[in-house]
Image 1: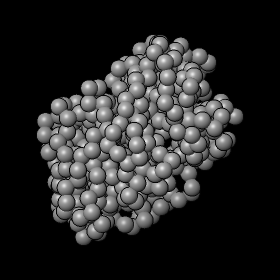
Image 2: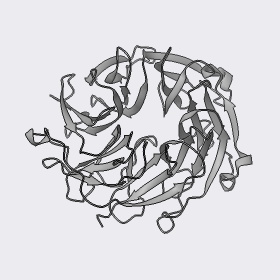
Image 3: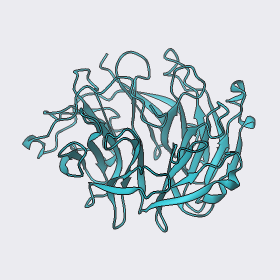
Image 4: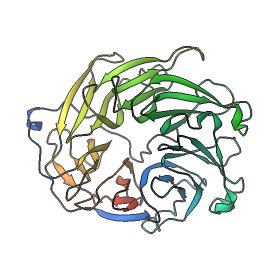
Amino acid sequence: MSMNLVLRSIPLVCLLVPLHAHLSEAAVIEGEPWNRHTIDASSQGADGTRLADANGDGHPDIVTGWEEGGRIRAYLNPGPEKVKDPWPGVTIGTVASPEDAVFVDLDGDGALDVVSSCEGQTKTVFVHWAPADADSYLDPSAWTTEILPASESLQRWMFCLPVQVDGLRGVDLVVGSKNEGAAVGWFESPEKSRELDAWAWHPLQHAGWIMSLIPVDMDGDGDEDILVSDRRGDRRGVYWLERPEGGDAEWARRDVGGGNHEIMFITAVPAASGGIGTVCASVSGKYLLKLDRENDHTDDWSETQIPFPEQTGTGKAVEVGDIDLDGIDDLVLSCENAEDAHGVFWLSGPESMEAHAISGLVGTKYDLVVLHDMDADGDLDVLTCEERENLGVIWYENPAR
């Protein structure tokens, strides 16, 4: 599995089945909030978490951009026995308006570097070179930050996806941006990836405000396409870019749905026969879109609206997993605008759609959701971050066990 995909420690067992009439009225959230554990709250505006095993110990480590604090920080997972305590962390670079940060071994030396994407007036992608000596990973002076010149002052960069695009040389960077001149495109890795002046920019698709970029085989043909959510503009919605057979060929856009909605983060659920059968899309409103493929590998999709429970914020992110260990997939959702409301909650699926608390009424603006068994007790916990009340990088302990 690509290190940039959401880590799932428990496999999906059952695809969400079609939803019925009892979804017409939003439920009321039940249950007590889960225990919250803080990984880091040392800066301001934690804006998403990306995971990979940076030190090779088998546990997922985390990198986060702190938007208001202007810091890029990495955290090494201390293991199940200490995972409820603050994690060892390091500020690997200082940049303005970071919106995203992701692990990637960009130069192939075996150490996971970090690429950060900045919006605001910065409008630049940065490379944070990791020390080759693993023992120096938590030493801030051992890291070096450089500008990717082809990105400088070009667009308001929002999200980066390290992926091999052209089958040549090292890993490339697929990125998305927002507002004027926004696009989905990729930076082509040169023969020597450390020579940042030699990286070239290739736009693929005009955009309004890119939220999600997911590498996934949408059509079951054995290669990774790119699933996209775009929240603004005249071509907004959920779509995928089909990987061409030739390296220089055009990536065809295939629409999934949601063009009449302000789509936020999305997640994809595989079909039993291969490819993707369902896309769940969080919406900047108090409902979720469930997009189902009508037939295997076709471009015909249906839309179902799932209303949020009472007393929640507006949609930000969604993930799918078996939360209560009943063998059936559930939905975990995070919210913005959750003043005096639930910012993270889950819906049991597929028939009842009963709503359950996770965060309670604490926190206002949450971001990406990652489902992972953080404490190795056999159930899926919820990793996220909250940037308005500075709860920081946090995870919620699933009480199922």
